Amino acid sequence: MKLEIITEDRLGMVLDILNVLYNESMDIKSLEVFPKKIYININKKISYNKNMLIKKIKDIKGVVRVKKIDILPYEKDEKKLFTIIDSLEEGVIFVNEKCQVDVFNKYCENLFNTSKENAIRKHIKEILGQNQLILDALKMGKDYDNLQVFINNKDRKGMYVSTARAIKDDKNKTIGFVILIKDLKETIEIVNSIKYKEDEAFKGIIGKSICIDNLKEICKSVAKTNSTVLICGESGTGKELFAKAIYKLSLRNNKNFVTVNCAGLQDNLIESELFGYESGSFTGAKSNGKEGLFKLADKGTIFLDEIGELPLNIQCKFLRVLQEGTIRKIGSTKEEKMDVRIIAATNRNLEEMVLKGKFREDLYYRLNVVPIEIPPLRERKEDIQLLVDNFVKALNKSLNKNIRYIDKKFINKLLKYNFPGNIRELQNIIERTMNLCSGNILSDKNLSINTNITLNNNKNNDSGALLLQDIVEKAEKCAIQKVMNEYKSLRKVGKVLGVSHTTVMNKIKKYGIVCK
Image (cartoon, rainbow, N blue to C red; front, top):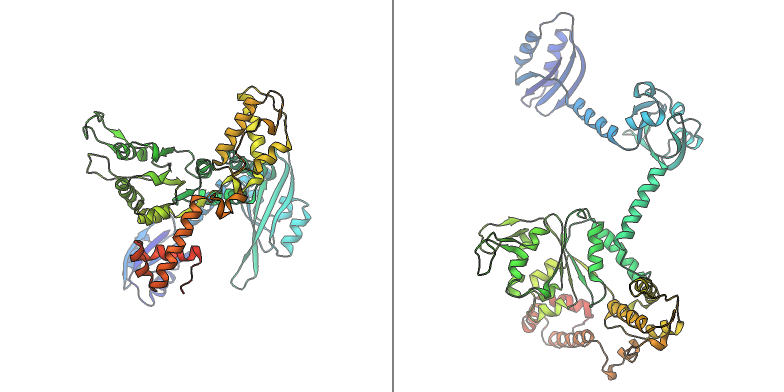
């Protein structure tokens, strides 16, 4: 008989209950004590009055209720644990300090072609056979990782890998082991499937440079979360490819990936396109209304390209989506909950736009949770050869060409070029050159680019070839330095420049400005 006893919290309660059971000559199989709850499992006697026993327990001072139950808490926990262990797609064996089997899951029953009942209490040697490395490790009380086990029975034959962890008592003494066994072939297949998934995700991202390898690692890490991502980079650097890679590696990859080009949306239709509208909301609206792009991306990912082109009035509404996770259709008073992973991209300097009042500062910080900077092609020229090879291979098919060789002079000429249009420009150059090529060799004779715009020229201030961003940053640094020399307080500097003191602080760190 199993009893649940609800009690008041007082000293001596358990002892009083045990005295009643002792006086009734009851055999207690188990006892669990919790705050204000006591659980008892009693062996049935040949003759005893169950109701009388319960009444005597109820008569104890502080006992609130006594109820007969079918299962004890520890039994419930044990059932949960064994259900989990039996559902695992790998072998699980618990052995005691004598290396005798205490737990043997269903996977092991199939693997070793023996029942759980037959395996329990057997020495692990009888199960694993003469796998001396494993037996020696267990004998010495040591953990081990990925030791090979050869299984040979009529149903299964092959190589497996085993890992074990010691179970310690309060005095750090080994009292047993948990042994895990996996099919080596299945393990290799899982590793290969993960590698295949990563290869597929990064399929369009060509490059072996350190910066590209680092970006891939960042994408793999970021994909595991739901944090907002802001991808920055010049036009043609492949921002959308990285956004799609994050999506493909994420747990949302079975839901929609919705791409929105913010620059391509008409000003008067941006709100209705993003958030949708109710029927009759405005002239020309569909009679049954329309779902917005955010609704389409619910549970999935929305990629907001050229986010810097969003008008300020839409930025305010977009901020609400980020803050509260809700949208409101045009013509509706109802807030709809959204579960959307947001990846934004821009080729603009959003910090500069914030300073000029063209982009909301609060929205910028909401977007800039995980910033990813895509380097321009001129900063990873070691990837140019790989990119050219890839473009030639693809364009051979689409242009019906048979380019087999690429002249070194051709590559050298490309390496001297600055590529203001980045990878997209390189692709156009290769396609143009292949169209003009009559043979099977890409030669510099057919290559038409302005090689006067080079990195070396960009470093020369007198040539006027500095990038606009460099000019802007230099002017920004000078302006902050000048105001800092006059006002020592960050808040006063921010007020003069029309930005927050946080922005000033970030700029000071960025440019290494020292107050004189």
